[in-house]
Image (tube, rainbow, N blue to C red):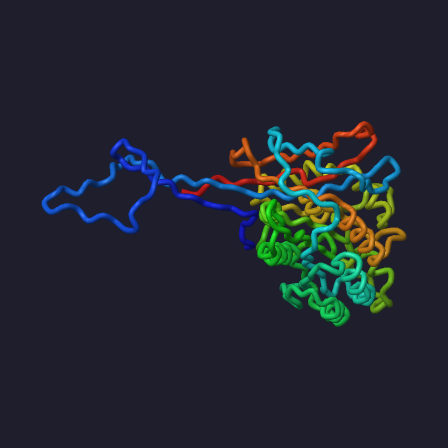
Length: 384
C-alpha cells in the first residue's frame, strides 16, 4: 500500500513528574543515579506520547468563465481557502508553472486490444502536452498484474518509446492496485513549499472504469492520494467502442461479451455508449467521492474513474462520441498548464476525520465563474 504522505511530522513531547516543565536544553544522555538514592520510576498514569501532525495541503484550482474558457488573470489575493470552515493562509501560489511529476497508468488487458494501436500513438501527446519541457514521467502497465515499465525520467523519448512498445496483456484489470502503485511512486517526488519550488504530482489513468482482482480498495487509495497531494486525471476507455472497432473473430453467440456494461439496460431501451453516458449523467460524483474516502474499507464498484478524479480535484474525460484518446489527453494537458496551484499548512483545524476544503474567488464577477478544486482529505486519528 502506498505510504501516507503530505509532509506528516510526528513530534514526541515528554513531561517530567517533578512539576517542572522539561523544556529547555537537556543533557546528551541519561543521568546516572547517585549512590544509595532510590531510582524514581514514572507513574503508571503518565501521559502517553503526544503526536503533533503538520500537513502541507496542495490543491489545484481550475477557474472557468461562463463560456467555459480558462481564467488566467487571478492572483493569490483573489482566492479564499477554508479548511473545515477555518480560513487558511496561502503559502504557495502558482499559475501553471510548477513542473509536473506525471505517473501514467495504462491498462494493457486483452479487453482493450482493439484500442492498443491508438494508445501506442499517445506518447508524444503525453510528453509534450501534459509532461511539458520541465516535467518528468513514469509509465505503469496493468492487467492481471502491475508492471513498472519506466521509472521517472525527464527524457521524453524514453517515455514515448515505452508507450509505443506496449504489449497486450491478460484479461484482468487490477486498476486499484495500479493506482496504489502510482500514488506511492508520486509520494517520493518533491513538493513545492513556501521556501522552495517543487513538483505537481499528477496521476494519469488510461483505462476502463472496471477493477478485477485488486487487493487495494478505492477509498483507501484515494485517502493516500489526498494526503500525498496527488491529482488524478483519467481517460475512460470504452470496451464497447473497442468491440465495434475490432475485426470479428467469432460469429457464434457469446453469453458474456467482453464489452459489457456495469448495469442491465433500462426497460425498452437499447444499451449503447450514448445511452449509458446519458443514464449516468445525474450521478453526484462529489458525494460519492466523499463517501468513498470516509468509508475506505468499502468497495466502490461503479464509476471509479469519475470518483477518483472528483476526489482529488482532477477530471475524467470519456472517449465516447467524437472525443479520441489523443484529444482527451490534449484537453487534460491544456488544463494542467492553465490552472492555479494553491498550498497551505492547516491551522485551527487539527481534528482527525474528513476535512472539507472550500475555495472561493473574490472578484466582482465571481458569480459568473466556475471554480473546481479538490473537495477535501481524510486525516486518520493518531496512532498510540
